Image 1 (cartoon, helix red, strand yellow):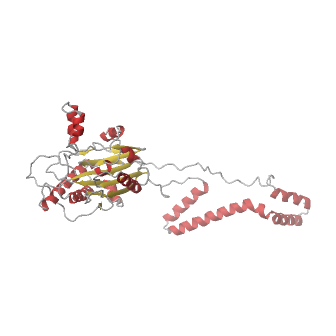
Image 2 (image 1 turned 180 degrees about the horizontal axis):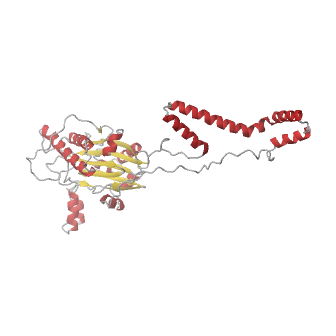
Image 3 (image 1 turned 90 degrees about the vertical axis):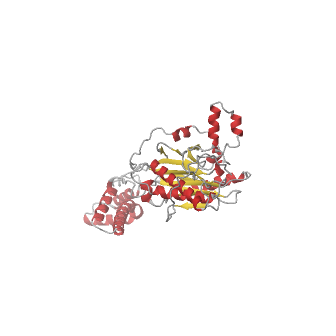
Length: 428
């Protein structure tokens, strides 16, 4: 399948754009063949310092580290390794600024490899799949609300108490911690179909739109769809609107090229193709082969048309000349007989032309045989597929837009001296 990217971003009502996003280089076919195509969205945490720097470091590191995937690594292993590096990059960014442990960012990353979807996330930025008019969320939010929901199921809290809890939306996992203990990732590759849309976004977008409202904008070109989603969210004019970021990968069928489309092996066309291939084997220039084939086809067509239509347009002169020649030779044919023959030449109902071989009929409905593509892996059941079946309602122009930036220095791994446990952080 072809992958077509699209994205948009808005600062909302905040003073700083703290979201970052990026795509791997889609024009690098070797890279795409070796590791797939990645898209990343990161949301710097406003409740901490250096939110913009944290999200930038996270997205850059994730793209760079995954691009170095070893052939022996699975996609899932490479994603987890890259995420650990991104976590270290956020930690080190804060440490260099004297703010160790005080910077954080969410991150969600998706990879399309061999027509299958892989993902990994930490925090509350989300991944959605759009298919056949419906949107399904594929990731879980790492927020304290999940703990509250568990306590409701265990009878420790009422549903109303959980909904009203002031820390319901506080993050329990994010990049910038000494250790990552909560990570969301799919266990098996998720098969994609032509027409699918992969949507990554920050909470500023999905907090303003329901899944139904998102689905209404996702049928078109991904760039326009991204702009429509941002515009639709801003129209609602929510107070204290957070930064909005959306990045989309559209899955489209491969376009057949002239070289890849099989030609019908019939009659003269097949012979011309064989001749052209023979010329090419002998080292004839491509333009010369094309010219020769074109001339042959033109002459063949012109001759056939002349044979069919000459009697119709020039029949009188031809018949008179034929009559004179035959009269001079044997004198046996009369003028009346010549006129009869003339009428036979010009009369479509006459069987005079019945001996002319008809051109072969070509079935306009005939289609070239479809090219066969290698079978892809057939994964087993996947949590993402269950989420797709469990469709439920839920729910800048200046920003950090990354395009496979190649940093010259790599941030060191996080310090292991701090063994403090993870804590919830309020999103502002």
